[in-house]
Image 1 (cartoon, rainbow, N blue to C red):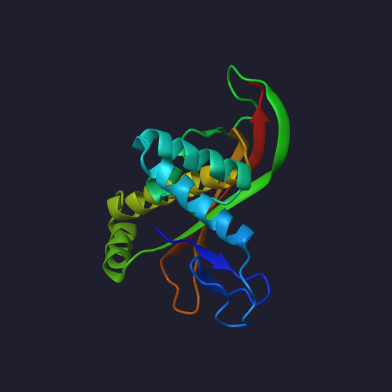
Image 2 (tube, rainbow, N blue to C red):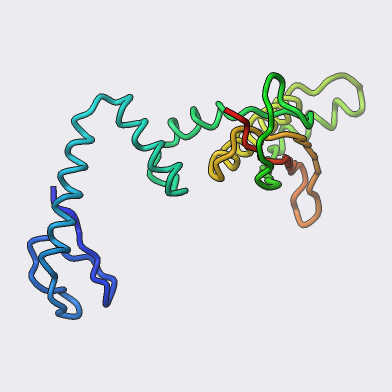
Length: 191
């Protein structure tokens, strides 16, 4: 494996084996090469670990740096699902140590024209519209997962006082668009 070295002068990538930056001709120092090689060694060591340990290292690195981009989506969602959420201002069997911030998550779902037509028929004849109910259920699950991910990204253990607001977006050809906003207070719990 060959790690790239970013030139601090012109910010382009260079290979470890290069002596000078290909763009600005700045000399690549031995220290920069050593750091890049050490990074290669650390990556190789991590890759030889069992998957569970590699995932734990990824999560710890993300929690410490605040950068969640390198965490695979499945792992991120699994970790986010551990965040407790409630509409109450308390978490059962836990003590809130600190309120971090107010957080929000938003999703917008569109219903296709056929679902709109069948929903309109239901309006006239009465009854439940399963297709609309499924969209609302899916949007709720999605927005709550996004709220958990937002809480995770700022280091929270839970989200209290969660509120869900539904809004139909219309006009400009946006018939059948549903927006759902979830908001709450991200908190740290006593361990």
